[in-house]
Image (cartoon, rainbow, N blue to C red):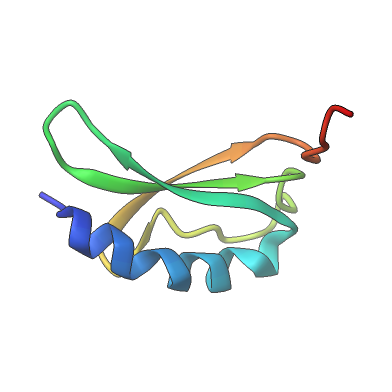
Length: 74
């Protein structure tokens, strides 16, 4: 089980790792139904098909979501 502290600690490293796959819209912390924590990385575009995207960072599971470009509604 991954703790909140572990997820917080891995967050900056995840931002560093996933920036090589494209523009990051955000990196958040998630909590599963079992109380275990993970990271959610929001990318603006799908990584290249041949990219080897990690499923965890420092033992913390990572979920990837392609959300597109984030824009403000003025």
